[in-house]
Image (tube, rainbow, N blue to C red):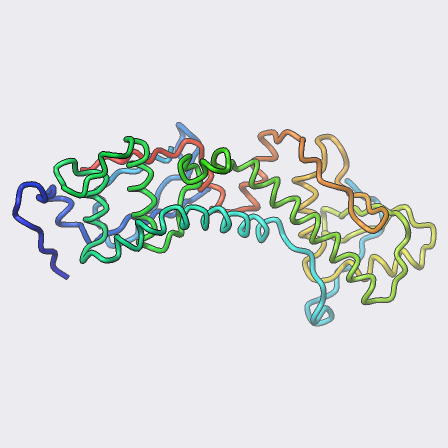
Amino acid sequence: MSLIVSQTPVNRLPADLVNNAAFVKQVDFDPVHQTAETGQPAEKIHGEALPRFDKVSISAESVAAPVEPASKEQAGDITTFTSFAEEFSKITQDYSNTIRDYYAREHEENLTYDDPAVHIWNKYKNPDSPDFRSDLSEDERAWAYDQELDLLSGGKHLQLSNPFAFASAGGPPTLASAAMQASQACREQIGQSIQDLFAESDIEVPSSFRLTVDQNNYSIHVAGVEDKELTEAMEQVLNQGSNGKNLYDHLKLTTPNGEALGVDYADGHLADVDTQREMDDSTLSEIKKQAGPTWARYSSTYNPHQEAI
């Protein structure tokens, strides 16, 4: 589709922008390939070698006998434990919706133009345009340009370190804070699932016990219950589907440093997650591993000040 640009000086655009006005920035984060300087993900640009008109700067825990998990055929329709990745994705989507709401009016207005990307460029990058937002600070324009442009392609890569979109919340979320929220959600869901599983199997839950997971085969073990038959029945019910793997991954992120992976169950619920626990580098690395590429959207080194070519 051809692009018609006004010949009046105030609306004249750089040649590279005109040639590529229909191209919208879309960045995929690859946590494997990271820059040596920042450790942040490198960019991958979609398209057939299309040049961009902007450059982005990104900036043994149990010795009990293993319990074989039930197969998918045996499991059928079962109550399962959520995963950290699933809960982290939900938290991230909630934060993304905050940004969508913040720029909703501007986004709707952008879509009324024949070429929304050009209009966004005029508003935030072209001081000669009558649409230029001189009422905003340079940082506000940089973030608005970055986020509104991303919304044109679906908003799948919205950076969450925008201080303006999260001003009413006291500041943008961090990777650590989002991970803690996801871990708390995991703990609550897993605790409820345990109750549901035992209720479905008519198992009278003991007042207290401890859960551990065999890191070799992800089988869940119950400790602290004197009745061996009850212990075996509890383990059989818990070891279904991906419950063992999801619980193991959850415990890797929430067990205090130096302690064996495990969690206590008492008075009808699992012990609370320690929200005051500091996350060291190894824990943050594990968070990135479990969360997948989504973690990069919390990058504290992301630079929205993109320079037009």
